[in-house]
Structures are given as C-alpha cells and as structure tokens.
Image 1 (tube, rainbow, N blue to C red):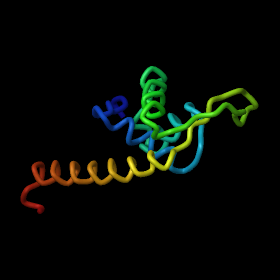
Image 2: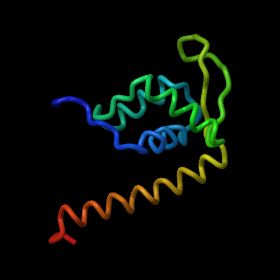
Image 3: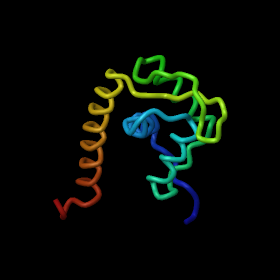
Length: 111
C-alpha cells in the first residue's frame, strides 16, 4: 500500500454517522472503526475527527456524554440522535447516487 487514501470533502461526516449507527462510542473508537472497516485505507487524524464530531453535535445529529472507556479512562461518548439517523439515511442515498454516476462515467460500456 502506498499510503492511505484522502477522504473526499464531505465523506468524513457520513463515515462518522455510519460508525455511530452501531452504537455509542468515543472518538478514538470511531477513528479505529473507520480505519478497520476501510481495510486500513482511511486514517482519520484527531485534527479532522474531533472538529467533525463537534460539527455533527452542533447540528443536532449526535449527542455526547462523559463516561469511562474500555481501559477505564474518562472519555466523551457520542451517539446518533433521531435527527442524525435521518441525516445518515439521506447522506447514504446521496452517496450511492454519486458513486453510481461516477461509475457510469468511468465505465460507460459496462452500463
């Protein structure tokens, strides 16, 4: 592998929302989930992750509360709100349309 892929603008919010759809988790767990589920292709740095989590919280798509991590350290846990689940459905639909349209351009004979 020649390095991790850069996330396209706007995809980090979608990936964070999707990660939180499996249940509440702290930031490090969100970043780990994205890294592992992407086959180590997406490495989300703290400098991008926490501003995204705070932005999603300001929009009302996630809520947070303090708790203890699996290694007994104080951590802020994030969870999806009902508004966040609705936003996730909308963004997944939009992303799937986007991927389909790009595929049509890249491989027109296969369509």
